[in-house]
Image (spheres, rainbow, N blue to C red):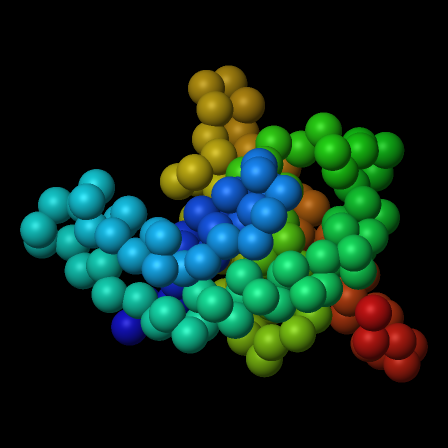
Length: 149
């Protein structure tokens, strides 16, 4: 099963949560990718992983947003698009609370950004790559100093 697709599902759910300011259910997104993909694309995913990401971000959102804000360098968190904000939330959550290797997380964030956040003449993937790289270094430094969050 592809965890990349699970991250996409979690992104859709977090986008909905952020936009409507209310909890959402993965089942409401169950057919979303199936309806928009061609028959030759494998869209299997790990539902439990998607739910883990979604619930993990929601349950730790204040800490995650604080870490993102610290690493934005004079750019307010609320000025990020809903998509970019939630892509960074997913990456930050995974860096903090999962054992997924840092390189995989950063690559996944870049790919999500390229697929769902690219706007003509504004390369969100480069911006998100820079921010998630700073966040990874920030978290690593804090772990070395004995601070979890």
